[in-house]
Length: 392
Image (cartoon, rainbow, N blue to C red):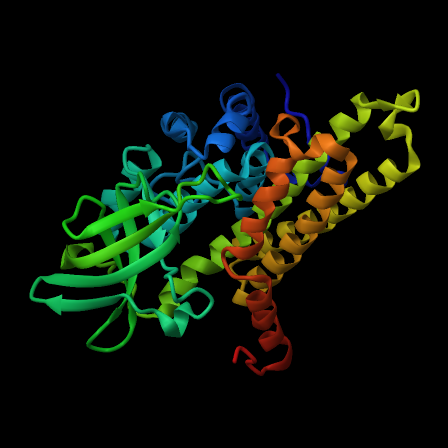
């Protein structure tokens, strides 16, 4: 089977990838089509994650692509964006799982861990032996995490004592470790810890009744005098600036995920428009349907161009917070428009999962909110434009 660029890649951005990168994407595409696409609606409806596929994704090398200790070959941030496209165009929950495992959990260790911590944890996480989660958001602290974090860490000899709670933590019902961010009582600085989920005093409870990213197992986490050895404190995570180094990269990843969700909805709409017959002809031959498809493709193309450039800047080492923030704010806003236009094409059929589009429509709401709301990301960009912070 040869590699064919996606029809939604209207300007051929994928042509910039190497043959090795295209070969990887082809293997991933075949796996997703054979193993995940057939079961995804059933799992979404039941709000269950197909944990049996974790090893399969790991065997492909999807986790750990970015890190020196685990990457199967030299690759770029642009390529990793296209991996997110392949995952997300099939299902946003699967893409989010990889985003948490590879970007947030492994990314925290890669960016802030010691050489020993990287060597110990990253290979086991890349192989799927160890599943990670990322504990930053709290019940009373989301957008203001830089200042409003309430979870505390207290040094006690060779250990740290953690107390507090976290909310909306993806993968957390089945993770083996969670990266917990907490304020040190001694200096009021945010620090990061690798917390095995089997530790006494640690508990995770699944958040029920979600109607977006239903397959993602988000949890409320409680930390009640959790004892963590100093060896599991991330060596270079000593202030929120270190947390921000992780988020800078993953925020751009979410931008790619937003484009992927748009593409998933668009592909479903194009297929339906070619099959559904009304007034004696396929609805794809009606002007109004073509208008919706053309507007959707325009949003996808503009968003892809932005993602390509922000990832190129990451590869060049010149990406700043405001670059990731603009990418996330813009692509998720355009995603919201796109999935609505695509759902509209289906009429009544668009509200049942049989036709896929409602899944993308609903999942878009979570991507729109996580990794910084649109408003917070626009304020980051606004600060860069004006030189003045307007957060409060």
